[in-house]
Image (cartoon, rainbow, N blue to C red; front, top):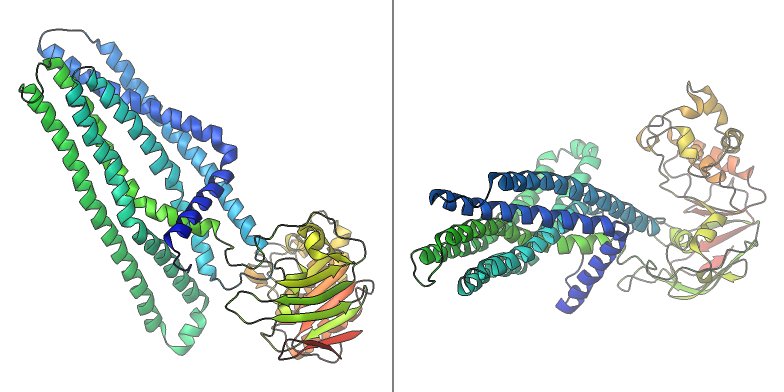
Length: 561
């Protein structure tokens, strides 16, 4: 979870978050504005309908007909039509805007995920992608639109009743200001901290459920299902408690809102009795009464919207801050294209994931010549995979330089660098799709012959040909319909398909048995003779064909062997 910030920093963070969200929504600004116009027109028609209907009732009771039924029918039909158009249009616009925000979120997340999701929980990422972004739906529909309507309603009360009796108009407008602006503001302040707790509580529950589902086999094996279920129920109970407390606070403020409306009606009744406010015609009294009742009906949702504001603010910071804390995420990308030459050099490079974590590398110096086959060997957790993240420009060193073809990596665009490097991670994912679609991730415009060539180089073409549907065979989630060795070979074929001159293999035989592991490296020995191959492993099998071995020591200094 994010750490608590001082008020000034937190205020700036929230401001920056909303600025980014509105930037993402910028292509929809005209549609969002038009939705506001539709909403205000529907509101105006509703206020006019109720006001004139009240006045017509009063005039009819007095035997006078000054307002035709045709006008009321026109206002009623117009309000119904505009309310339908407004709801349909604004929700459709918001659906598109939220869809764009999810695309932006996924795109932003991917920039920091090439080396994994770092130190974050998958359940937390899922919560940001689903719950937090859904919460932001209320920013436009439940806050912006209603408060714009509240401003218009306040002016209508002040002007409409002011033309009849100015002191009465000021009194009712003041009460409306308390109910429509002050109470929602108080609701937002009171529930702001609890909104953060609610958002994080939902994320914590998702993390727990996600972990429970993924570890279900181990939970059953160790017979701890009851204990884990009790833990989830505790988290759920805490979340419900926070929901209850927030609802209780909002209910208390809603009572003040309701009271303001009742006092406003009381003032009009006093005017009807010629008390406090004098010399107001009966028809005007009814006009003011209907207008006031209609206006104050919209204040209760405003108070609830104020309570939602705390959750929206925290959801905004969580969505925009998806890569917060990811080293190098905010560093500006280079402008130059990667050079044709692909020799790699680390010069006095220092790197740590965060200030509170130990240095991974200090003054690292290493040269990998173009076309060499090298191995980076060391125990788990010592920082081997970090090299892949550095080469792919997912993270950047705190000091020193990384050169590609003699050019500083920081001066090169990330896209051009990644076109030079094909990466096979230790947790390469096979999508729940066909073999063909999984391969095309490596090269979307690959031909049928290129797909089979890549499969042949990975020594899995015969296996795919033997399958009933060939390239169109469905792999299932995570490639469960094929063996682990076959899955790694398909992943290798996808990597080879890119034709990148540098091939980085990060623990490529993870999860394979000894025989399959040897077969994999024997296949690797036969391919990519014109490529630079960087093999990242925690031990060597003895069958790898290598030009050089770099071994990571406990001091994180690399020595050549």
